[in-house]
Image (cartoon, rainbow, N blue to C red):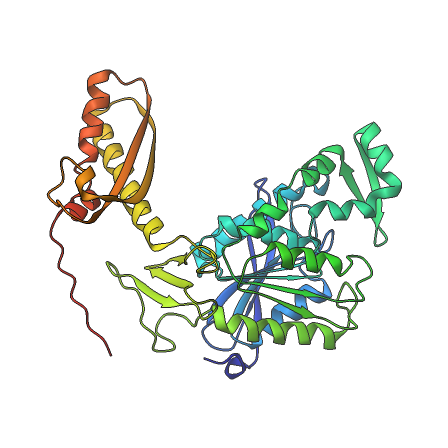
Length: 413
């Protein structure tokens, strides 16, 4: 359904939920007129808050396009509880995950993550921990979270020597601790962006006075397709102009329309019911697929150079199914026997071999598929218990399906 068709009056609700430190976080949920087509999370800029101009206007703009948006104050900021001086970048990421958990429990999991400035870096870091995310967008975000330390230059020596300092930012004092600097310097942001596994939109002003536009290039270069860049020409870092914020929201909604579907059944598209899986082309790249299994979203693709490597290959997913089933079967048996199994790791590999090289195979000519499976069992198990658990792995339902005759009935329209 085109984003424009959702335009209408929006309203907001006040919410609270527990943050990373257990303190209540204050939030607002911007809701569209009528049922939301999807839910999104908005992460505000460093030391800002949910009521900052950019957070408010962009969230309401997305709601006008049918996307409900949760914006909240990070721990110790705005109306949220806790002490900002005891937070760091990692705790902000954890706050985002807690916000996603709250949406999932009370409404629906966020399909879209949007972050402004350091909030953009935070959504890039949090995305892999929110499996339902289908798209991520950043506005004026630094390529490296440590970029924010340029705001602390005058006080950095005191922070490092005395352990903390009160830093003046935007006319207000904030307590910054040495642990904040250590945490933000240790973030593997480039690896996170490369492994994002979701479509990425980078919005940035060439005139950004705080986070140079070269940061957008670095984020874009580190990301994998599908990815897009939009220049917010003439905008300042905080998007204080209503026109700039509205433009960003409109572009975001139009871009997200390709990746964030309506609620199940809203557009007549096939939906995954219990016991079924729906696989559909993403629309970018030659082979990228989106897999819907009940409420769970996965991606599949072919590795480069055949595909764009945005997700596991079909054979990777096959091995994952066998490995997961193996581990679950072993765990269930060990728990039923009350054996001291601490941890199971299953490693699998698929290849093709000549039939003549397989002494125990029925096929005598040509090639056949071979899956090598290694099961690592950790715990105070004796030899008999270990051997029995490896035997039980052979009874995993997926293993048995792969060894049995399977009838596949195909229809089309």
